[in-house]
Image (cartoon, rainbow, N blue to C red; front, side, top):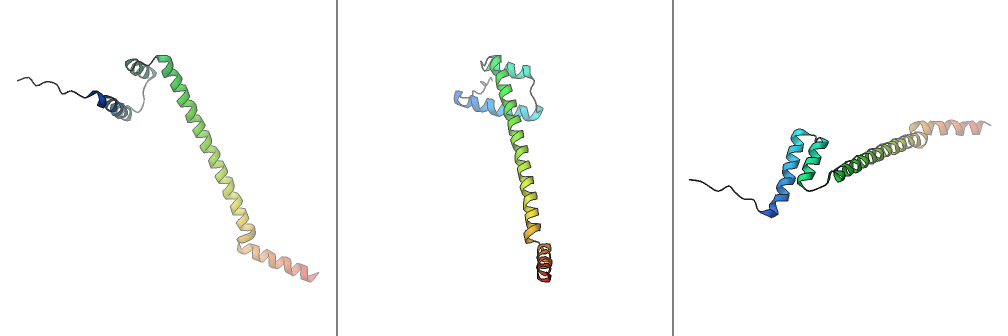
Length: 108
């Protein structure tokens, strides 16, 4: 007996392709440019748009990395300033320095 091949409703096709592409990407971890161009052809996306999209994504990743590096620099600088501020004002050494300064002033 021949059973008909199961059919997938049109409204589910985009979700199926999206999940399949993610699963494939997870397995292979990379796509070649020719694979992306070929997938674009199947989706009726001209190759020049694939190339442009790749450049934009790469530029966005660079900007994100640079932003994170700048944020790390600001956080590190803030930490150093806070530590020096604590050492100057809130540490036990500060109380001893003040005591020595007060004694020096009284001796004069």
